[in-house]
Picture 1 (spheres, rainbow, N blue to C red):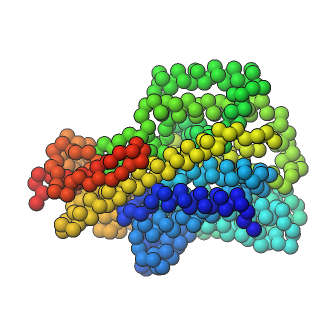
Picture 2: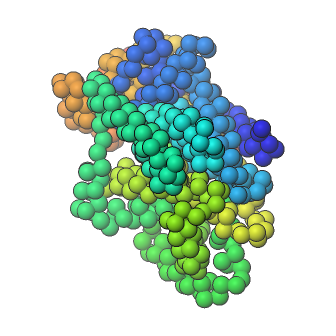
Picture 3: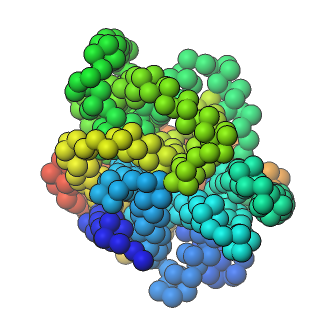
Length: 569
């Protein structure tokens, strides 16, 4: 039975997404790729990759295709299909916290801290793979808890469900295939009477993983990935790579500050004089490093950036308005640094307790409420090693840390050990939630304005291949024309990729401007008309300019312009 806390989590999650207003007939970051796959499956009943996704995406494609069959294709329909899955994530997070022995109010806080995080909530208003993968990941952990706490008679059922959900999660994002292997290995070690069943389930999961991987590698336009380039990059450029990894890990304490404050604020309040002194000295030293080195948050962007959500400066034409200027970025950097140092100081102070807990785990003497935490911790170690290795190729995004969030929130809230939660934690949750809603709303409003500009041109009879709008629109146009993106990573078929220089793709784009990076991926788009955030020297406005939209943060009316080459008809 779902209780009060779970209902609160579900309702707040739904309201947050609806406040964002996810209606926009244009894709969101990479979800044009997954939306195209869902569209093709709804049309033909087959998986059709398009040269961009390194994730397998499988079950998400089926889910999206079902919504397309029921409601027709639109980007809004695909975004709304994420909403029930996002709500499901909230209910499962709440359940994991309660199973870990955390009370109702704190479980509500821990669940909402993840859902309303600036790198999670924006994804709930998209068709990206992260929310779908997270849901199946959490579901597999819950099934594993049921196995650990249930009777032997139902053990086979729970093992089958762990294997199934683990394979499905991995069929969306491949790293989730580690879940059934790690989890069932743990069960085989913990419960001798279930060893044969658990090892059998792990074997099925391994065979399924290999079979799905072999199938995926044979698909045209499917991309493969390896950890080797990332490791080589870290070895060759250790300082920037390690700084990126450090920044990502510190970012966790910032993104989850409403919960991490349970550890941080008591360290600053009293009872740990020497520890506070160490934290203070290190915090001052870190602040100096921020000032001198200009090493400011966000250290590794993707979802959360100085522009709010994503970086329109990298995926749109023109210069979008900053949301976080230098001062707030400095403040957030110091909060993240101080929080991280407090967590380290807490771990040092509590090392005896932590060592005893580890010994109890190794001796198989932990209470049942600890098992979910143990499973999450066992999975997080190899997951982080693989995910963070991408820092070596400059592609270790903040959203890759989301699967670690449940472990962090549970450990932070358990550290209270009966003490009252600082009231500032709820205030921080409200502040972070409002920020996440505002910047997510603004990015969707920006996309709606871009879509309006494209529609204005199309009404004038301008074909999509003559419109350069943003990364999302151009990639969608390319897949409509060719069926795939012009990506050098495509090896099947061997002759798909065309090696093009930026200058070959410039066309009528002014020579004073740098050619956007994604144009080489979209050679079918000529670009005679341009949808821009600010006027581009060398282009002229069209009669449809400007198109306005309302931003919440900062509260202002922003504009989108349509410009064209002076030689356009």
